[in-house]
Length: 61
Length: 195
Image 1 (cartoon, each protein chain N blue to C red):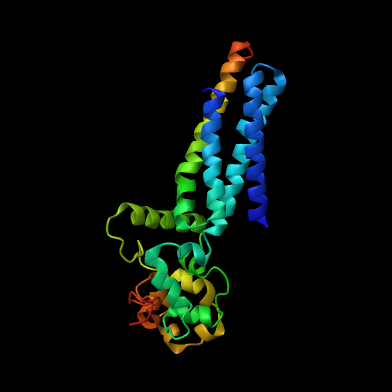
Image 2 (image 1 turned 135 degrees about the vertical axis):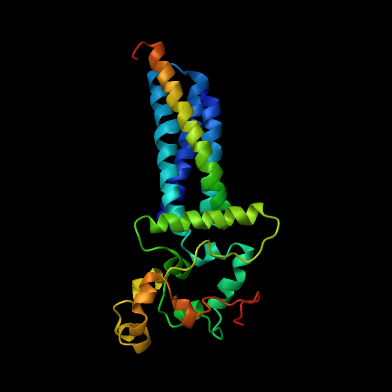
């Protein structure tokens, strides 16, 4: 995954988290727990894959 | 305080994300950029998400959170109504429960009881947004006596009551419920009044 995609996923997830904190209604918290966390998780997975790819490229792994 | 710190952490995460994005445009392969990536894409988002989850799980205990869904309005209205005689309203108006009244009664006092309560809450919310008819929410299982006994068991007023002494076993087995005599827990009317 390219850094720009990781950035977009994580940024959207964190933005949902910020909105849920500023407006803690059931709808916002539900959105963060179901969508925000998922987006951050996708971003983190993408980052880990990027690091692993980099390590293989440099023959560390 | 925790909420303010969490918002500050999220803002720092945004800043680091944007800074890392700028560095990515200039030089992706430099070691320093990779350290920025570790902070911006790994540590700060993961930390911010975990802290936000914890803060929001605490936020979910507040009455304002429960009352933010339209079908819950009669329940919230009733507990703040001095004329209401339902069990929940009496508990709150007599200051028997001072904080987080919804959560205090609707969480199970067991290992992972709080987690189960929140999962049930999310199920209610999912049903609210996905079902066309938004009706009065109902419990998924009968209200457990153990939740009442968590506070009342051992109290002199409860233990010395002749009625309680005769039905102690039935209450423990769940053959009789507290609400049989002390109900309704909440008003049955839509306007927040006991019927």
